[in-house]
Length: 280
Image 1: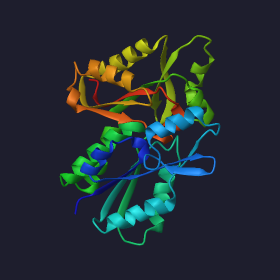
Image 2 (image 1 turned 180 degrees about the vertical axis):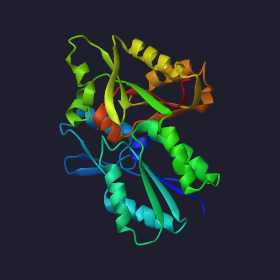
Image 3 (image 1 turned 135 degrees about the vertical axis):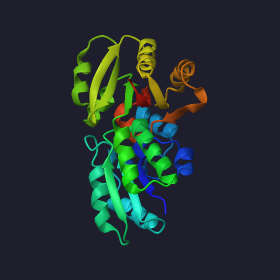
């Protein structure tokens, strides 16, 4: 029986990809006041950003319940005896801890391994995709774990923001706090380093920010997987995809929308590139 792969909604996997590779996605939650929505299920991206901009109530996010993970584990235990769970970075969320603790709630017997990817968005997504492809090809859990840990060192992201205010409000800004103090209109660029948000630069215009993301992608000598994601700025995303298509097969570029949980902490206008590849 093949290894089954579980992840969380912050990986931003397109739904058709998750379905094709039989990846179980556990949603985090977004709450507006007393209204709770499952990430990517109960609220569309368009509905979310409309509320984010116009609603007087600022949304907050929460991790899945232990029962959500345990129920998924028990269901999959009827199909396999090996499960790998890959979560977003534990530096930004308690999802990893919940996924780990949920093993103790299982009613069925099954080996479950939980990995903190140290990433989020499609960087996490590429780690998950590679694990799922290996599992479908017949790799054992230990083999899939080895592939996962190797790919954690081969992914990277750069993200351009209109504002860091949403990161600041959500307490996820980390060392990128240093970019807040400029009196000039800038487009901050951030990255994840060891699972934490870090500054990667600043540009004076949106066009220059797109240049930065393009040049980041071009710094790789070998690109295995590439994704462009946006938060309510599809025109910018298409412009970037068009440019990257001259260097990487356009039909292989994943186009993804950041889910409401990510959008709560980034706001609209986020544009990012995620890559699985090598620089040497």
